[in-house]
Image (cartoon, rainbow, N blue to C red; front, side):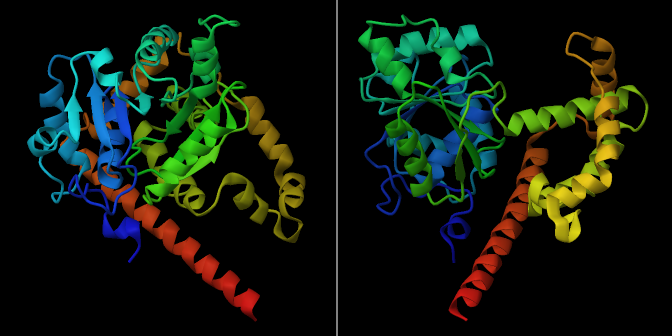
Length: 352
């Protein structure tokens, strides 16, 4: 049985010697959907001490209500994690960061917030502390561009240590982790982040993104598809629910097996991608030229999308989250089985 199957989503007891990173002290800043999910990941697959900070006044109640949705019943109850000091709830950023070996930020998607937060964090942590941002699209270089450019050892060190660790929601389940260094981030920091997540044996796939860009890779692809989906709703081509079903019945299964380049390569037969582009390149061009250009400044399409989505699904609750996670786990298990079969076949060919 694989490590991931053995512990599908639950933390082992805090003192378990089988989990890695017992010497790490991770500080999570921001306990929204991404922060809570990362908390579940670190609790489930590492033996690290975890401090959390969020200015919300009901932090403990929030964690006790939401975290169990992401952890299986075998996890220690939240009060026990807190009593054992495996999980530390902090009432200030300073107290959360003082002994941290890793600080992972997943606060609001605001350049100003991140710049203020990092300016404060680097004044508290040691010069060896690893700095991670789980932003959805703000490059690391942008987050620290307010610091002095030269002749400031603290600023230079922070730029060398800050790295974007961008997940796909929910990160305690979804395998992707985009590691996005700035031009100043050292290779040592990139290597450390990759080794940290590989050691978890959680099935996560840390992938290095070689150049900063707004939204990185996964969100750029996702948001462009989402824009076209919203455009089609706005134009009355199909409803939000119908478009969801189109994706579930076509792109979803297809891209769960392989990405767009490999899959469209099949479309070209024995000529691969060249054959595909030669065959339907004109149709592709027509669609690109006809693509929607709606913007976030226009509220008309937003009202339609919000209304149709709410009518179709209501607002997500605890049972919806559990159902989503069951579905994602099932798809990921199938991916793993497919990869294992491909590796077995490759070994057979090699042995033959």
